[in-house]
Image (cartoon, rainbow, N blue to C red):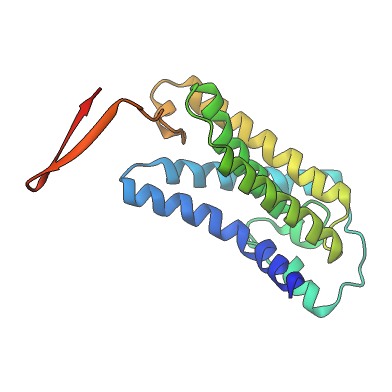
Length: 196
């Protein structure tokens, strides 16, 4: 039962995290989700190129049919042929660490409120993903660690690229500080907020 839950987390994480950020972008009517997806596609290409150049191999060619379906599940399958063929660098781990860098670094750079909950959730997902990919023999520890390093590095470079351009800085996710002095009251059909 627990293994099935971990399998599900491993399979859907590369879809759920980007979908959440894109949907949030639609609800907030801002282009931050589009900027994230552009960076995520760049991350997939870089991960694929590194997989080809490094020529790392997966741990075992004898993967059960059930595990093979989970191991080969890839949101960028048509764009990343080297990851599919070589199975040596984990794209899922790369996506998670890219997202971690893309969300956490702006909190630090912009000196805004650091959301420890989101950091803890992403790190937990990363640990589960790392463990399950090794347990299912999708990747060895080198492949999973390589994916993590690639994803975080690409995410870090992408954040610094957007941050250094004044106009593009607004495309980064950040949390504006929570004002402790602001209070809002409902008067009639309108809210009226005042700073205290």
